[in-house]
Image (spheres, helix red, strand yellow):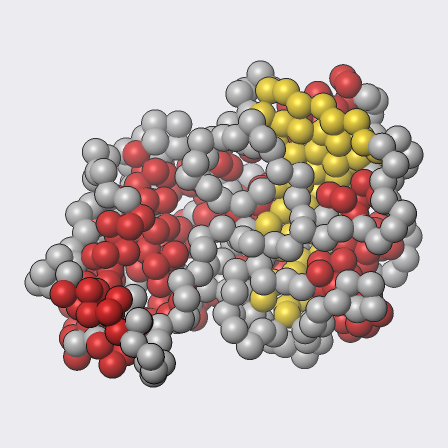
Amino acid sequence: PLALLLFLFLLSWPFPLQASPPAPVPWQPALPTILPAPPAVARVDYTTGQTPGGAYYKIAMPDSWNGDLVIWNHGFSLDPPDADVDLGPLAEIQLGQGYAVAASSYRQNGWALFHTREDLEQLYDAFVEHYSAPQRVFLYGASLGGAVTAQAVEQADLGNVVAALTLCGALAGSRNWDGAFDLRLLYDVVSAGVPGGTIPGGPEGLPADSTLTRADIAQRVNATTGILLPSALRSSRQQANLDLLLSITGLPEAFLLADMNYATLAISDLVHDPAKLGGRLAFGNQEVVYGNPAVDAAVLRVAPDPMAARLLRQYFRPTGAVGDVKIIAIHTDKDGLVIVENESEYAAVVPPANLTTAVAVESTPTHCGFTPPELMAAWNSLRIWAGGAAQPTVSDLQQRCQNLIPVYPGACRFTPDYQIPDMDARIRPRGRWELLFHPQMWANR
């Protein structure tokens, strides 16, 4: 497109352009890998394999095993399950502390929660078969892996699970898809009539036979909003379209392309995969008010398939049935992919005595943009709590973080007086469907 060619030409000009667009945010968390301070782990035994369900796994066993097992749950990816399983950002630290560490690829990509409970149970069985039953089990995960962790706490048979840590976790579970669904239909409103800007598929994300790639979607979103251009090069309509999308969704500009990937590619995978929703729509917006009369009049209105809606809530939305498990959840306040409001949803169902939630207030929006001392403070606080100490407060996490800076440099931004906003202000309730399938209605049945 001419505008994109002009943009690339101007990038080579000897003076800087003003009002350049923020760098797009990747749609997977980029957590730092933290290495232990000396002495390093003397020896680690690695075991890999594949479970009966088809998920790959990796187990790391230190020669000085303390008897406990840590299970890491990775984030969202549309790539096929990878045999080279990642053990998480804290693996080297945890091995150095004597923990065994294990992880699953999950058998499904995308929204994998339809089978993650079985995947983790089969991983646990493989661990017991190769070694022995651990004394205690710790779970932790990031982004989608936070939802996997919450599901496992409530539903999975993983031995003596005592504690869990979630990092920017999708702890509102399937309700996050309502936000992606809204963005998808709102985009159709603003892109109508824009040359090269429309995206097929509407409420199903993309058609089942679509060949559109992330690059194709970025090009079309750019045609509609100028998201890849400095603001000075956007047309008045592009800027107006961008402003409207961001004002209704509350998304940071840098997250728009990543969120559009979820609203297209990820929704399409969820809807069309026979092992997920099998072609049925689990989302609806018939009674949703978006707060802009023109948008409310123009947006497509869709009713969900009731059985698909219930299935998606089953896999998964937390109910708060966590038993005695101790949970620390940390989030960055400006996350535009897994919004911080997920934490208010989770805190509404989990007993306060089981949950400490800490939010890092950041200057630039990130997804899971924690510093090494923040990650270490959260993990060490969980270990100490599981060991019999009092439940940590946000102030405790912040102080522990500051104490770690000489060894693990980085900012400490946990803010004790931060008030987590309510999810309804960002992802509008689904009216009667939201009430009919709310987890509290089914928790005791």
